[in-house]
Length: 118
Image (cartoon, rainbow, N blue to C red; front, side, top):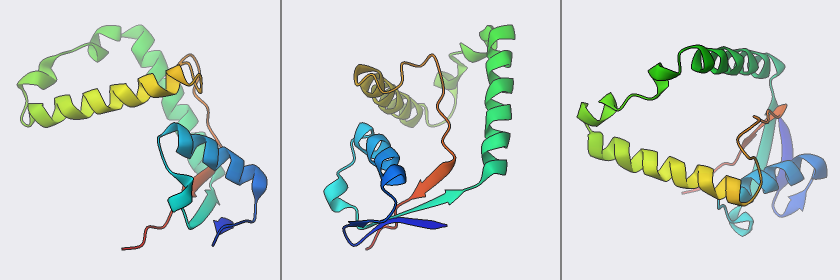
């Protein structure tokens, strides 16, 4: 684990810049962040990329499986719809910011963590 930033001191600028870009794009306020840690897990990245490629191929081969509306008849459909709308608005926000147009998936070598105090 690497300490990227702590107590308003940036210790790893390149990693902090990546974090800041993602955090701001998600609507986060950097002024409220006290600490940022990063973990590099190459195995996790490799597994995620393989899973993503598998799902992408499955989506291309059997697109009908991904266009179902049967979730509307399942339990908690109001919450499901609210989550879907929230997620869709985040996707739209990223696209409008031209951060990622959806034609590619960006995988970073690092996973960032922000400890929250109560």
